[in-house]
Image (cartoon, rainbow, N blue to C red; front, side, top):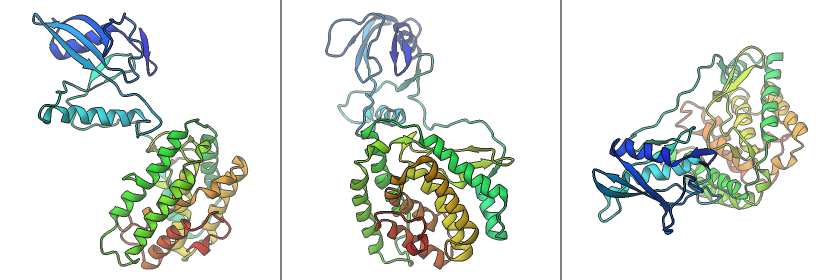
Length: 367
């Protein structure tokens, strides 16, 4: 037996998998690492770290050979997460056999929690099944506050609870400079992040001059180079910490939903994703950051900064605010915003990319 990404894998497991494809009468002959003629023992050492193995077996009286290969995890080239590697291997399985003179793919698979090899090659779509949780989404609180303008104790307590949650999860650090670089690269270039969002805006967008988007992209590239050296900041994150992903029950009891884009990232991502909504709702109600939403914004930030002592976050949050501003200014996600609010959000996004230090006490100047 040997450990493969924390799993035990044996030759018996390999035989079971091969039989699931070729039939129960298959007899396993030997296994060796490609390029090395010596056979492996029952211990498949290094099996899960990117080495190709030749599996030789007898099927209907014939000697057959196949190659079983995994991808090596790495801190570069977008292979950091197991889902990245799954994406590549599933794609290869679906396309190898379509290209003339290309080696054919027989199947794609995965290792389950017991070390068995499971086929996924025939799958066309993938799904996730989660538990059901009772509660009301946090945006309902913000909707109520926008209407009533009355801030209660529960609203203040929930704001602190959300800030405390980020304080707690961001304490967990991870030493991977390359992964931090990748997360900053994803912020700028990923289809779900800045570049993808910019591409979702309509061609004829009346609210800003077309050069706005060109200059925006250029500024984001500059920010990527500013931030990519700060790998010491890599920490545990949620990745999409906004009011539609937070379920509250009584008081400050809550559950978060839909963690996104990896378990490690930049703390500023989570902070910006939540606090942009205090700005967003305040603009709709007051035309600026004011009154109840100003109190929530200050309370969240001050609690977070006091308990983390992370003053550096104010020097890196800008592109994350720029991204989240584009989200709430988007005609795709919010088609019914007033012109005034949409323009102020776009101006805020632009001004975020022009300032070196975010001043939480002077937010209205950025609108």
